[in-house]
Image (cartoon, rainbow, N blue to C red; front, side, top):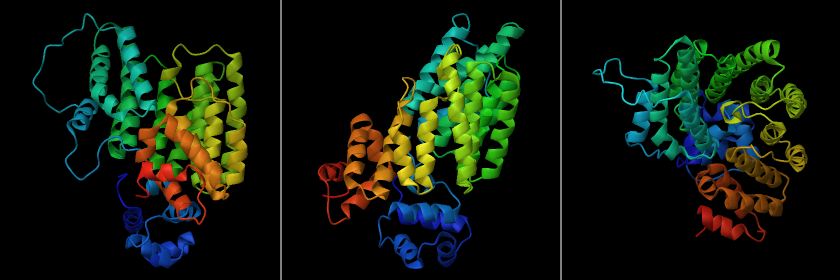
Length: 404
């Protein structure tokens, strides 16, 4: 939950890891006094290197401590009707009274693919509320398309259904519903096996690997991504869609290596992925890139910046960020993450002015996202606690509620 106090997060994750405060201190290198003050809410924030160390000691992603932008309110109440409808669409009831299908005549593959493309656009724009509104209808249309017509039509419908369920899995991950995500992705993988798209199964495998990472199943995530990447490299290396799917899987495997504290292997794989992205300019683009893996030179470099920051290499992260030229198809969500990571890196090297400049840019492009992201709050809180405050920090602190 984005509204959960940092100390409550630490305590909850520590108990899940079956650690005492002393055990967490030993594994993380963070003093017992700091851990105790956080958990007792006598300390409301921690410097970013401390958070990195705590995440490493707890064997979780940094986002497990700091959270993602919330997609739905998380206040302990029952799930909102939007999310219930998404659950029902992903996992239909075991029994429901039969209904006469409506609108089959007007349903077409082109229409469903257009709905899917718009759905993925909403997802990458972090418009999760709007996506929850439309996703049940998209899944229903795709499921109907997969059940009617001849064999070729049904196979194309299964491809659409696989992409719709994959989208449901991604949304569920962002909402913190990892088990729902895996249910959606298992159904997506089954649909991929009956579909006309040979790249759909490895694309879904990449999504499953991400879900495994969120569950701290790093070995499972890495093995799955490498296995799927090997298959794509063997059979589809000559097409732009194949290169994009393979590159996305390689990035996923690299992320798992990095989070297993093998930064050197991760960096080597990321460099390989970045070189591969250069081949895309020489290949015809896929018919609809929004339905294929988000993979380009920009996305690889953004992920390299993120991994460098998470491994307490802020100077390297800033050097990598300077060389980024964002492509036109870079999703807004990736752009916002880049600005946040750059702000983190500037903070870690003691450049408060650079951090404020990045945060001001983030506020311009994604104010709602920034207001709800606890990492942005942590950075501003860290800067506000210092003896000297750069110009612009007060407005950011007021915007985020760090100061009255």
